[in-house]
Image 1 (cartoon, rainbow, N blue to C red):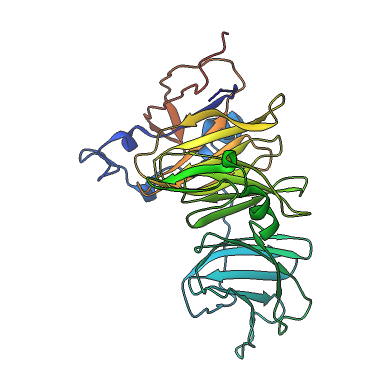
Image 2 (cartoon, rainbow, N blue to C red):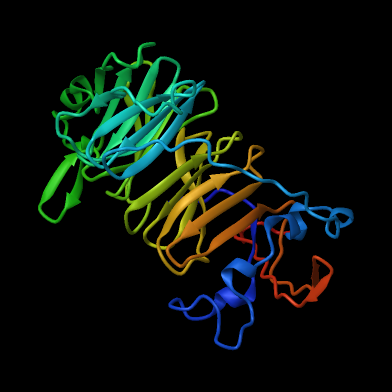
Length: 338
């Protein structure tokens, strides 16, 4: 598989290099809660701001929204909050009614299979939901919360599956003695993301693939097979076209569309986590990538502006106290000369 250039560096404390069962060595005096906040990461903050006091920000709980099962996903559309749960229900909560004690029946959608809903995405008057039964469902949104939403499509569509089933080239190996057409997810659809132009929908799955769909006719455009060595847990998109996927195989991978082949190709793998990577978040400008994993760590990576950086050790001052921190900076793309 071809590689495309990308420059990212990671800022992480040396304590996190210890045994995966203990994030910090026994001699370390630092705990997870005592680590400096992101305000003090030097690549994210100017030198003049590093020693300024942080303004206090306080939040108060103004309401509790109760579901009948585990909540897996949230999506906000205007003044309506959507939640999905492990029993296959999707609920809609209005801001003006969320504080009332007598909640109305706000279940707006339920799949026939009652499989867990792992992810939600809202696009205009459509609500996309990812399910544990390997399907993606599209619901027509109504203004009235008491009215159940109608499922207008299930991905892959019947037409898409029918057109692919006749040619042998459309089949891929999914298990030892089983094949399926490439448009089908064959395990839980774990995450959804919408591109910046709101045209393609991206879906990631525990079947180790991610797929791209048109939001107009719901046709599957591409499937990246064996994108990871284990289940894919999260997917996020940047404004400049990069796709980030994280997996139970402990890695994050960066993808981008190749202009000539019109397909997403691997740019670079990020391999610093010591356990499954469950969550990703990307800054609005796409320069900072956050990843959370089962090793109880959140890594912060910033895109490199320089061409090549190997490894540097810096002494940093945090909040007026001189704390010696070993910062590992690595360049993930090694195929470009400076």
